[in-house]
Length: 307
Image (tube, rainbow, N blue to C red):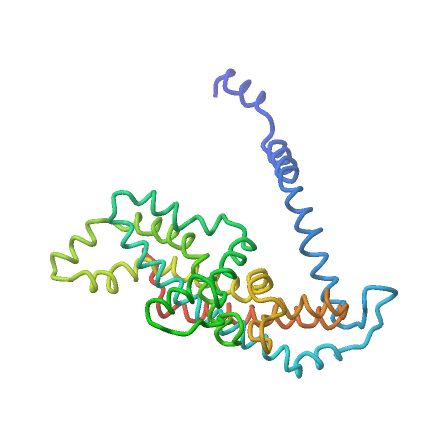
């Protein structure tokens, strides 16, 4: 080995020193996000978990009562109604929303002016959910645009969409699908861009029509994205709150739109029963984990990964 090579090797900084320096810089850049997660996620989660075993109204010291809060909530008709309403919202909005998003993405993918339509579909996504709820609240009034259209066109008497338990729940589902459609369409359009045109051309040459290509080629290739979006959409549906809070005040007639998160809010911030509220939040956590685990277990049957 030449002396120049030896001198260069000796002049190079030790590899361990570089690794230590990179580690410190990495910790420095990660620290703000880690502190934010610790302060606003982990510590509140631990506090809520401990609070679920106590009786506390926000003042004084919490009184430990064991599993009484869980027994109370698991036998509560209000929590049962909230779980049913939340599962109905998830069961309706997730498959309907994903199907409409895929169809919309396939149709828009063939239009030359699709950026303009994407902006229109994406507008509700960047609009405040409170503003969306207030606009739809006016549209769904008995003397609103929708009832007026049905009356003038079909002679149907004005309908109080938000005054009936199941109609109000249906209205929540419609608004939820409408407001999330744009984001899903953009994501599925990105997935369509990754599908090679030669695959679709080969299917067409083999005699596959538009429907056959959609169900036999496009959907299987988009299945990983469908799976990811279904998991995210189910979790989001289980956390429905702001829309029902504004669209249908006081959880609607006969608690027709009472969701689990609204139930948690009602117990904690309206009735100052923070122990019961924390117990209900733990029930929501367990329900979310169970549904997510079921989705991951079922994905082996319909998700097709390349390679």
